[in-house]
Length: 266
View 1: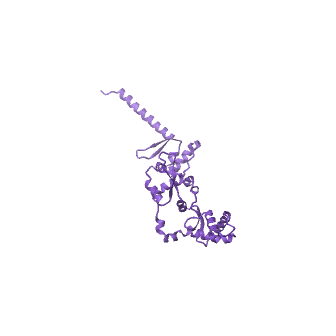
View 2: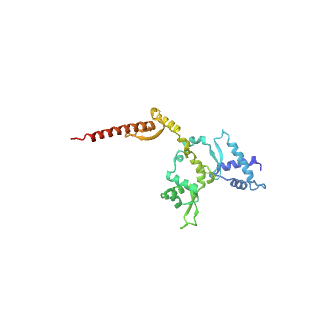
View 3: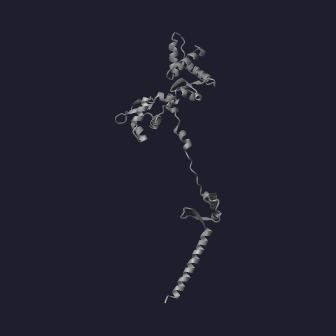
């Protein structure tokens, strides 16, 4: 059969299917439909035809497109029409998972296959209810048992419904954790020894205390805090004046003591 004859049949199969159809499914369905033909269509022909269909519905004047989602091909409305569709299926779109269920689902998606005990070890709380809800919504499934652990616990993994819901084809299509956290990483400040020269320190202080120029007249030697919590900077010149004042006070005190000794009270 020519591709022009195959394409309408592929379109109608994808449109009418309740679940995503893989290329192999399409090959089998079309060959069964035209079983009387001697020449059967091949997988390469179907893949070429699907690619042509995708290009066709990628045009702007089509409100829907053919996408590979949930492990197969299906017709999906374009995201520009989400708000319009929400008016029709509002209740369906408003049903959201709880934070606990989302945490559990994320752990299963990135760590699958995984047991309930391993999930609870990561979350730190009991996850029976969340797992049960995810099973009811068919977002996860029981993929087997872990034969190596005591008691051979059940193992959980994401389902095709999960992939269909999030528009991916396998767990490998999930965003990498590094990509998700890349915007949240704050780079540290590199501190170099030359940044601590007197000139740099004075410049930093002048930016922090622009109204008080007196504190940057000399080389900074110490920082003190007043009783009211105000930060004060003492310069070497101020220290030298304080020292001179202290020495003068000490000499005056000594002279007074000597005078007192020479003229003791009668």
